[in-house]
Image (tube, rainbow, N blue to C red; front, side, top):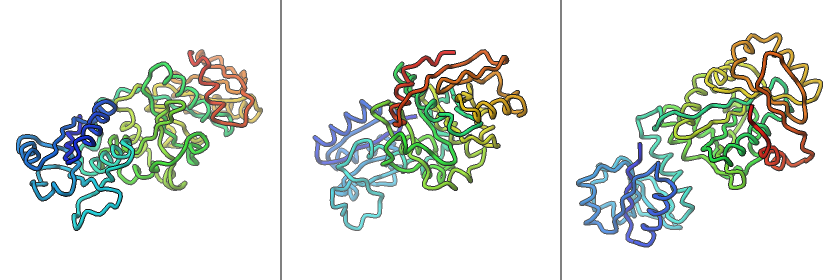
Length: 332
């Protein structure tokens, strides 16, 4: 599904620039039409159904706005458009921000709560029974590795205490915004707030506003979010908390592969053995598991024949560590 978007502004140069960027970078999301006069606007609306429109305020009195599912007013730096009560978007800002605003607003009125497109992504769950094993570093290293080979990938952090800000800038909207909108088109909403790290190419989401935002999610909520993420990408990498609760087990059920991460510390080795030997979940997911020996660890399990070995990287910079590991071998 593409959003049929109409851009109606008198500034032809601006309209062409915006239209060209949307057509080049967001061709899978928008089908764009442009006009610069009230007469042309009336003609377009008479013969086409538009999902959304970016309009200068002068055009709003010229047409029947009820014919547009989501009319949005483009405003200048002052933000003043008289008494118009329609939702507003700043005209001069990053195109990605305009796109995000359109998608967020449209997601709220779209009745397709399952998102759009076909769920095709391979799901990689990254988990460890012990903290400090380098789980997040492994998840991001794998993500960067696959992106460098041409995969379209999203990194989703579902830790109770998110570590996203240690690796990426968090100057966008919190993923908590999505948790409040699970009855809307979640895929579109997630697309609207997603962030892109230029250094690694990883698409990610800013962490939740507070601990409870993740903690109160149910297993069903998690499933909705995951299915919304998997539309139109190749892989979804999910970074999980160290618990093995109902929500984590739901992710295991949905995952194609589970990275079981350990390091060389005694604590990590002991907890890994306990999970393998004593937890009934291990038997259920054994065929999905790839054992990731991180930081030079050499843990083995005779029942597992899929193992990845990652070296110890001497650095205090977490970004440097995952980027170094991303050039490693993730085949198993």
